[in-house]
Image (cartoon, rainbow, N blue to C red; front, side, top):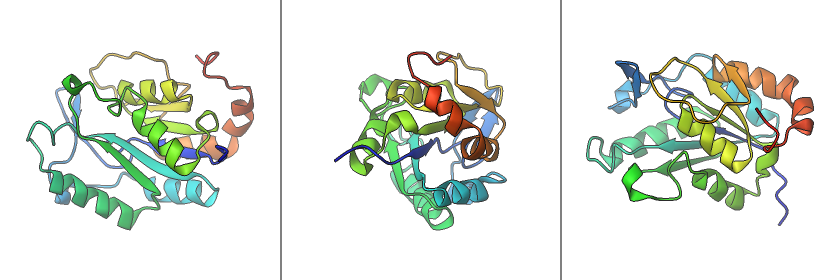
Length: 191
């Protein structure tokens, strides 16, 4: 089957929902009650979905492996997101870095799995993230990458294709400007 569909891959924490920031580092919500959808996210996802994009969440949740957060809480959050938003799939890596898995961002495993399962053309797709791991995963998969820069205190590895302030802003670019730029976009010649 030909890879023909386009997708917008979204990191969860910091792109879809508010994170807890302590000392310049972002943390996921600890409880289902803490899951707060960021302003403009519901509309942005609906617009992208209506334009024909698959919406796939790709999220690292290592707190499950370390015992900080129960799996049931993460699964409940994902059920809530599916109920509230037009999300086609959620891919989750529960591993820690030391596990050496293929799914944990910055590796592109979750994006590659979604591409196989949903016939997604990664070179015609987008990734929106707020951490360097997101951008590196998107780059490795061949996607056009948007970075929401919250000024976290962490290293940057791969330069994003575009810096935006929110998912709503990325949506605007995807639906108006980027289709033309994407024709010229090549992962090997990107920034």
